Image 1 (cartoon, rainbow, N blue to C red):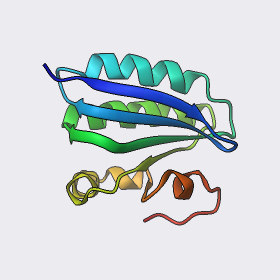
Image 2: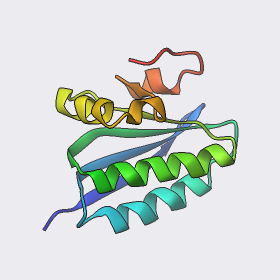
Image 3: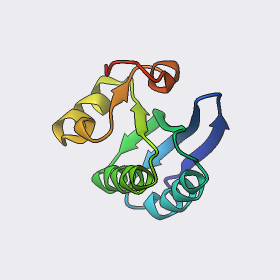
Image 4: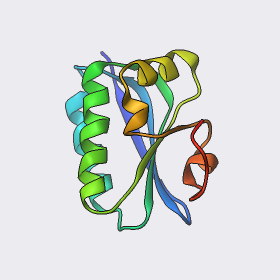
Length: 119
């Protein structure tokens, strides 16, 4: 059975949500609940960084969850950024146009920096 893990870590500038496993139709409901619970606690102007480097697979249903979470956070004044290093993951995010709504970075440190440029 596919599983997805979500760990939460606070830094000085951001709440970091680290995803691991596979984010697909079988795991999306569990992941959605965990992500939205964590995201609801992020006060503006704090950043929310979603680290995808631990994911082995990201389905369209997972992308929708990330976009919905980012839109909800933006309504509260919280910026969301993602970290992805694997070329396939980066290509998926670029092809779907996700990077225009979720800036993508190489590292959590880069994503957490207020004035960092997108990768």
